[in-house]
Image (cartoon, rainbow, N blue to C red; front, side, top):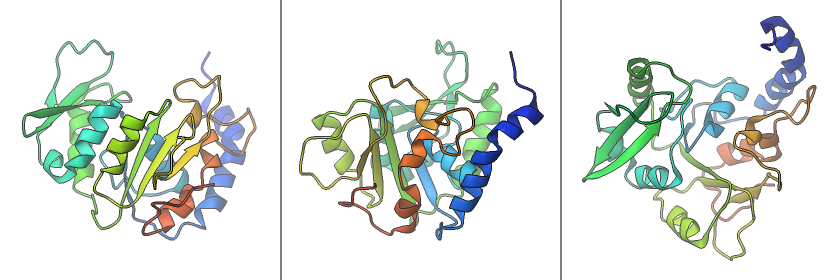
Length: 218
């Protein structure tokens, strides 16, 4: 049963007011957040910011995301090609560079042409001097840590289900639990909660900092 819009707004009012108050601490009002899933989308939405990133309302596999951000300008120059019969019930696109494909899962779109239009419109807003990379991955491995470290941008946040047992300079935070399900990070903690699970991370500090590598976000 779908909740009527007005009732939904009333239920979400505490969270809306919390995020409005929280946004007053944000000094960086024009960040480009390149995110592997909707983590960046919710930051933009909750903080009332303009979508200065093409990675809105979509997701990538971890391997494709890392591949893309390793050569971000080059992939942003690629035309988005629709993948027919992808097996998903939403549009899927493909961008390519140097013979390597990256697949974009436009999960919150119903029409590929609209998704492509929004992607092209928003990628023009990328500010490489104010760029923040966020990878959200449930289970982390040393292989992905090493790949993540090689991403050629200083401001990187790795959100994972477990704290890596290593001494690498990497920004990590564990906000999940053993009952984690995909998307839980974006949910409010309970019906009338002011906070989403992702609010356990101080992403305000992350976005206000010019370089947070080596600092743990608490």
